[in-house]
Image (tube, rainbow over all chains, first blue to last red):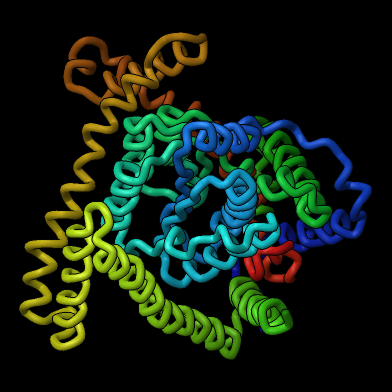
Length: 255
Length: 208
């Protein structure tokens, strides 16, 4: 067994991050009490669903071009919170799915949230929909829902590509309050320009910890902060060394 | 709840460990296992497509039978789905009729949807460039530098326009993007590890 060339730094980084993650998760409940900085986009979820309730209209939720990857798992946490809130407030929630393999998981998350909210009978299986696994066919399906189904709040959290602007502009045209979040840097300008609130990059991954205060998720957030501090340290030291013609750190991280 | 939680966690842990090992070490058995895991993903996706199709059929058949608003659109959807599936299953994706449908129906419709972006980018830009705050003013100046630097007029007016546009894209833009990417990568690592280790369970039963 041999380490693949150029992956040593990745391995060291992976070990440090995993160790830091397990350390903070073990600290458990003490960490869960620590304050997390306010994320306007997540606070706006209540406002968006409240507005839909007042208007007697529905909420639409999309995870974009979802798959079993990190952004989708982060989005499940927000969906669970949203579904719980819509169940409590008796607001219809329509979830549109792109990947057929993710669709049953989405159904389960929404159904579970309705059960937890004490309203299992209010769950409507027809409102969790698989549309298409072709990008633009899916986009046209979502546009159809936004145009026809009396939606007051359009929530978009996950992995978005070229369809992001189509969703955002149509939602804007229909007068929806729009709360979004993605880690896809090329779609962030569209969301920030058109939508009311946007979670940027890591804020999407922090959503679970922010909404649930689950000790495991808050611990993970602490580990991410340690990672960011290390990255900052490496960038600063690397910049200073490079400015003085020292390349040893650059060579080291390439290993 | 054992079958709903413990079995998926075991599968996630095994598949995740295989993929992590495959990323770091050169070993034939692990590479083979990783390749098999990816093939399994394709097989599962194929089976799940049937589930997705069933969901679509259930929702739209009900709409047709109840004659709900715009039920004729559901007829169109179900008919397209059945015809497309029948042609695909009988002739395969390279069949003449399947290719005809793809090139003359699906591709133009997709291109039409995609082309909407051209108009939407313009309307989004109008909203983004309204100078209401200092940040919006900075954004406008940067956008002006990038746009004029990419046009022939800009080059003809002053040769500094392309350079200033490139400076905004290569220095300011990249610095901001990298900050976001580092944070997002750490977030993705955190959530992936939690899923692989079975610490994140909300997606399994909807209950944490």
